Each structure stands twice: as C-alpha cells, then as structure tokens.
Image (cartoon, rainbow, N blue to C red):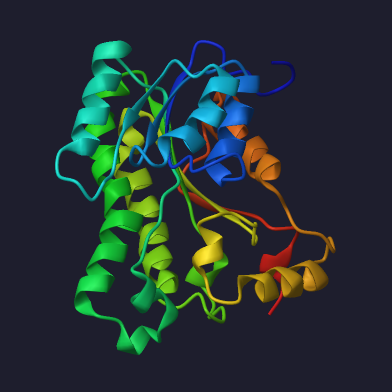
Amino acid sequence: MTGIVNLAGKRGLIIGIANESSIAAGCASAFADAGAALAASYVNEKAKPFVSAVTDRLKVDWVAPCDVRVPGQLEALIDQVRSEWGGLDFLLHSIAYAPKDDLHGRVVDCSSEGFAMAMDVSCHSFIRAAKLVEPLMTQGGCLLTVTFYGSERVVENYNLMGPVKAALESATRYLAAELGPAGIRVHAISPGPIRTRAASGIDRFDELLDRAAAATPSRHLVDIADVGALAAFLVSDAARHITGTIIPVDGGQHLLA
C-alpha cells in the first residue's frame, strides 16, 4: 500500500472472477494490495469453489451469486452492496459470453438469439450495473470494464465478440459523459491476449497467443498482474481527472497494422 496507488478506505465490487488465472483475479489482487475493501460475485454454485480460491486468499469481505442472465440477480447483488456497505467507490465488470455456435461461426451467420445474448451479457450488463450503482457513488467513483482490440480490427476467430466489444467501448464513452457530472469515471481496459478460461473458448486461441508474443514491440505477452496494476491506478484518486478512455495493456500490440 505504498506509492501513488492507495485504495485504503475504498470499497470495490468485482464481477467476473472465474479462477486464479482470470483477469478479474489479477485486478482483485492489485486492489487488495493497495488496501481496498472488496466484495465479489460468482456465477453459480459450480463456479463458487474456483472464485473462493481467490476471495479467501484476498480476504474479500463477502461474496454473493450473480448470473446476469437470471432476472433479478444483478439487482440483488447491488442491494447487498447497499445493505453491507451503504455505498460503493468502484466496480469492475469483467464478464463476456456468446453461445459456442455463434462464437465459432462467421459473424454473418450468427443467430439473432446468440447476438442478443452476447450483447446482453457482455455489454448491456455493464450499463445495467452502472445504473444500479450510480446512487451508491455519492462521493463519485469509478467503473471499469474489459475489452479487446478485436473491437477495432478483425482478429481471426474472434468473430461475434468483435462487434460486441465495439459496442461495449462505445457504451464506456457514453457512460463517462453521462456520469461525469456526478464524479463517476468510466474506463475500458484492453489487454493483449492472456491465457484465461474465457479466452480458451475462442477457436485456435493458442495460435493467437503465439502470433501476439512474436509481433508485439515488447516481444512478450502481458499477464493479469499487468492489467491489475492499471486497474488499481484508474480507481485511485491519482486518476481522478481521467475518464472515458479505452486503455491498451498489450506490450504495444495496438501500434501495429
């Protein structure tokens, strides 16, 4: 809890921890190391032990179920924030989903149901969460989500998630503009390819990792700790005048055509 990032006294909710190797876990570790009090969600009972492996180690204040596809669960999670803490300083949204058939197929072939599901879970749930926590951020706050450069350029096998992440990035900018007067800042972090369970659902992801490692100016892949370090800075008071950004953490990969 030294240096420019000091989160002592801040309370943060993390949506999206899947296991120890997930991006949200790396962010949670950085938040905890900087002194923040944390709460977290798990998507279902099957996932809970993998989430608990992270939250127990970090001494997270409390955990609760939240599958954003189930009506009322996100609302119940935010209600628990209100009852446990009475307010909130930051939120990390690190969830994405698309049905396998739609994710592995061409965008032009995706079903309307699959597209709607991917957009609801991966994008609209961030907007819903922002609306729900806005009244809890009476002293301002910060909302973070996670994107990928496949939103801007065609990445082989990223498919449906490209348009979905593009929508998420646009939503980030609009939320930042709309919530700015209340002192609420909004950012999307854009990591380079990281070997996570969610990424393993992308067809031939290992090949994407190999290409990225060879092509980035830094000549190495980033990891969840790199993402966490940026996330902790963004939610800190040191970043109080920064909002509406899409920030790459990718070893310079975003520079390349």
